[in-house]
Amino acid sequence: MIPMTVRGAEKLREELNYLKKERRPQIIAAIVEARAQGDLKENAEYHAAREQQSFCEGRIKEIESKLAHAQILDIRKIAYCGRVLFGTTITLLHHESGEQPCYRIVGDDEADIKQGLISVNSPIARGLINKPCGAEIFIKTPGGEVEYSILQIEHLG
Image (cartoon, rainbow, N blue to C red; front, top):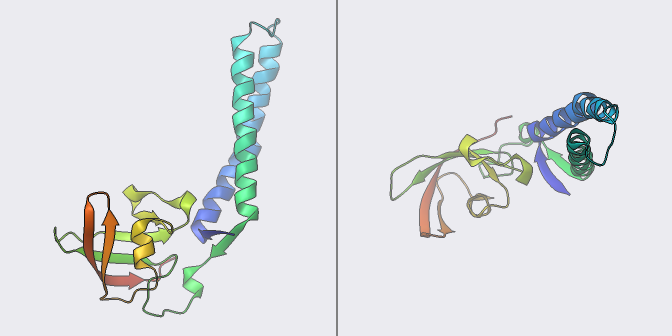
């Protein structure tokens, strides 16, 4: 099973819908138009459209597989237990710099560090899972061990 938040599953469904209902017909139209131009061996537009079709169909299969194997977890339906869980939003205190980064633990496909979304499989998330508010944690990074304190845990949707 692939852990995924409700929002992550929605985004994948939106992308799948776009690929099937908009992108696929656009590519088919481009192939038809390129075929009408004649000799397919030397037709760059035809080959480009076929390459786009291959990419699109591959992505459709990938998304369908991920959704079929997804374990969609809605943190709002899990009773607050005071511990870091998949889907929770955590505010930390970086002991050395004093910075207070805020992260939400999400599935691998949803991770985007610039938006504060970290993969459940990342070193930070693995160090945070099941820890209570106020806990001090040490995360091994390429630059050495970093110490954090958990300031806040939120069950947001």
